[in-house]
Image (cartoon, rainbow over all chains, first blue to last red; front, top):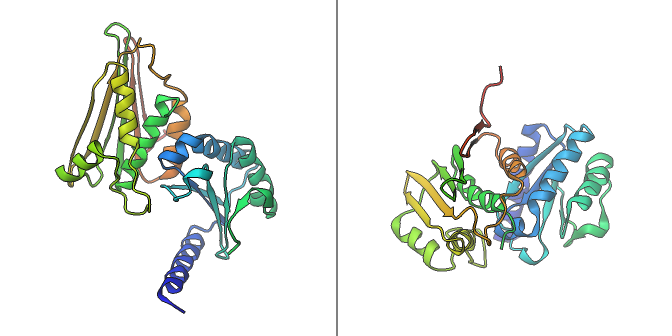
Length: 120
Length: 154
C-alpha cells in the first residue's frame, strides 16, 4: 500500500462519514465549474432537483463542486453512496438526469450506458 | 461562451462559494432610460491579493489549485462579453475583504446576451451551499426585487 492508496482510503472514509452524518443514502455532486456550466450543468442540476422533489426522495443530497478535469465530457455528476461506492456519469442533459434519478436514486439501479470510468 | 448572462452570474458566484463566502450578493440593475445593464457579484470570501488578481485578470490562469490544467476563463469571458457590449468590467478584491466583480453593458446593444434563467442560477447556488446567504437584488426603472436565501419565512 502506497501513499496514494492511503490518501484514497482516507477520502473514501471521509465521504462515508459525511454521508452517515447527514443521514442520507446518496450524495449527488454536480461539476459546476466554468466548463461544466458552459456544457449545461445548470440545467442538469435543475432537472435533478425537480425530479428528486417530484419523486419525494428525501435520502438524497445534491451538492456541487468545481472542475473535475473532465472538461471534454461535461456535464459530469458523481453519485456517492453510503457504502463508499462512487459512480460517475458524463455527457448529461436534463433528460438523462431525470433517468438517473428514476433508476439509480430511486431504484438503486445504475444507468450503465451513461457511466464513465472503472467502477470503484 | 455563455449564451445567457445568468450563466455568467452562476460561474462568478461559484468562485465566491469556492472562496468560502458566507454571503454572496448578486445585483442586476437594468435601466432602459439610461440604456445600461449592470451585473455585480459581491462576496465576503477570502479575497485575492494584488498579484493574484493581476494574474487571473491578465493571463489565462486560475488561482485554483485543484486542477491540472490551469485555465482561468470565467472572469475573462465575462470581461469579453461586457466590453463587446460597450461596457466596463471591474474587479475589486483584497485578502480577507472579499471580492466584488462588476460588469456593465449597453442594454440595447445587439450583442448583449439575454439575462436568461436567473431562477435556475439562484436555485443552483442555494442548493450548492445551503449555509451561504445568497442574495439577489434586481432593479429596473420602475421595479425592485429582493431575495435572500436565509430570509426567515413568517
